[in-house]
Length: 327
Image (cartoon, rainbow, N blue to C red):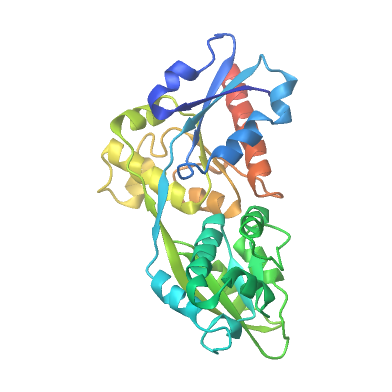
């Protein structure tokens, strides 16, 4: 309902990048995905139709503050050995009915492992596309990443979350055991495994490999000053990004050693921001942390992904503007 002009900055130069027109209401939004992973959301925000309605009403200043980075997972080496098995070997990929990929990063790690096995098995991506094993992607963004990497995708659920994928994944055989290979983040929840293995319409067994991890980025004191004093909205793309954000806030507030209950009571325990999440799983993490009221957590309920995420950004910015008007 509110439009915006959009500018870009980093945490270090935020005050120099906001619109100079004092008549515009300014909302500073932190983009917390990994380095070089915020471009898609920024582009959709910049081209959002809401921006074009009343460009004189609101300035949205996008601030790059990556809160996580990726690291090698503890099961990567074991997963590489599995992939490097000959395709006719029952110990390799061919014994699985599905490979489930639940993030663009997981897709990239999977493709890298396939390419690494090319030396001994030729074009591994071409071979995976010709095998009986099917590829399931959790959502459109993950499917696009896989497709761009040359990997065919056979199934995408109606909603981009693990629970929906677990409920909707079609069994290859309703009588025999369906074997699922699940390369994932070390910090990913067990939702997919739990949902699949509890289904009544068919039998599933899930083999999980933690092929990568997400680790917290430690913000500088200058970045924390920006977060605590200037940022009004934080965009979270995963539960890990929420955890990292809160870890940094705890450090700057000096409450790291307090109990979880006491941390919740500390003023500014979420950084004085509203949370805008990519989907339900991340929004649930914000709510479960106890640092936000439900009314301060925004997420696309029916269309998780970049577009719905951008819609939620403008909804949050509009609400902040409206609350300021009435306060």
